[in-house]
Length: 451
Image (tube, rainbow, N blue to C red; front, side, top):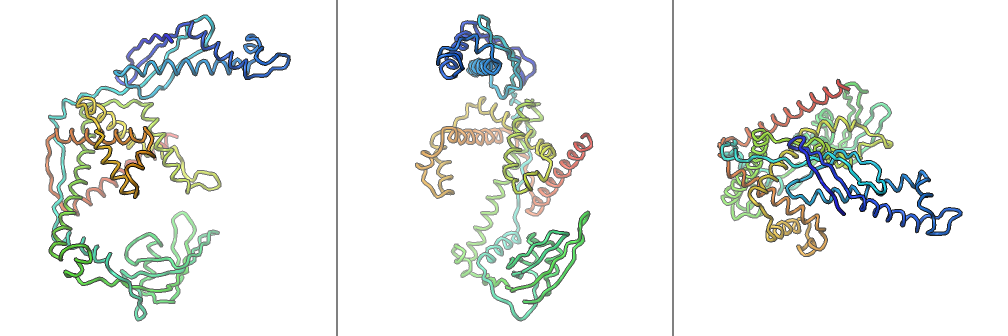
């Protein structure tokens, strides 16, 4: 098929493409469609395979079907030809003003296509990124060891005292709010853990209660009816911790207590180093996005948002009631827009780095990745290779390339080390999360006001 392609630039991320297909190729496609119709369609008054072409053209339902199939084939062939141009990475096709295919005439149509923009990464070497470095105190190490002691602890029934913080209770309760009534039995509640199994007020009411004791409480609810709880403590257990000694350390898999402290500190530092490096790499990609003024194709971004939203809606089916959505998807769409924008922009930057530095995913690296997946799934690498499709393996290769690209960029920039305590980092992460939530709420309010 002969297809002439003319490309005009609209913007760094959009091209206007004119396709022209020779009339002989148009006639060939139309002939193929008519022949197929003639073989498969039965019309009263005509023998099978003998329905005249003009009859099909005069019947609206067949005329429409012929044009739809012709346009489909012509567009597929045209875009396949366009995609052969490796210098033009097409990301999406927002629109195409295609018309009818007519015998004896060239088929000419225009399309707007979004392409991956070029990103000048030459500024990378001039940049500095903040890299947090966590300093762990002896107290941090002891807290981690206490968690290990809890893991090795046992439970002991309590019969001679009331419930106190740290105890694990089995609770029966009845909940009423308006017409909503629920009964639960043998619910496990750890006092003081703020686990969310029960409202804070209900957990606080359990403090000081003894086994077999019952209590009624009321919890006022803002803009709703009062919540009523009838609580009954079925049993109380306390956690018995092992002695902090060499024997406990051996039970935990260490040589002795000194070895445990050293390895726990090493693990904390290793995990923190990786976590802080990942935070710094994300920060670097954001800085590069701003410094390099990366253009994000709007239709491609919307497609990515649609994809994320579909995944979230699949996960949130539990919020459906009588096939009715319990929240507004349009609000959620705006909520995820900022994250989606940065994901797309980061992807554009990494693809540019992969091209600039000719980054490959070696087969040995793919095998190593498959080995890690196999361990988690308790399967063999050979099984995964046989079960995974070519697209699955290509996704793994792309993920490897992306990791190598961000690591290479990270190595090229200067690092400004900022030493922090573990508590200071957690507080910073909390503040960042709260600031992001506040920004999202403001965007949602603005969207609602505009609506």
